[in-house]
Length: 110
Image 1 (cartoon, rainbow, N blue to C red):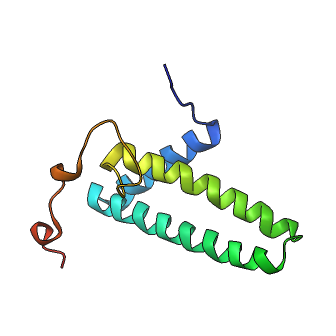
Image 2 (tube, rainbow, N blue to C red; image 1 turned 30 degrees about the vertical axis):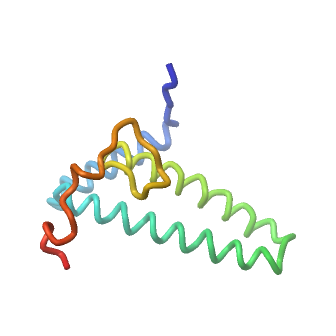
């Protein structure tokens, strides 16, 4: 069995997110949108830090930030995909879920 365990810190953060969502009256679509936005922000930060590190390879603070953002990105992407399905075709899952989601023109958000 390939179970993944989360740290107490992550568990606490998830509980805080759930409490925040309830307190703000956020529904699941708002929570999903917030997760997508954070994924995009982390991906941007990782890319920019990578470009910076190309010219400043000995900057230990930037290296640490890059590592932290990569770890957060992986955890968030995994969490998102467990809840909502794959983000792209590059992220495999146990079930082919592409056809289960509404198409962009079916969402009314175009």
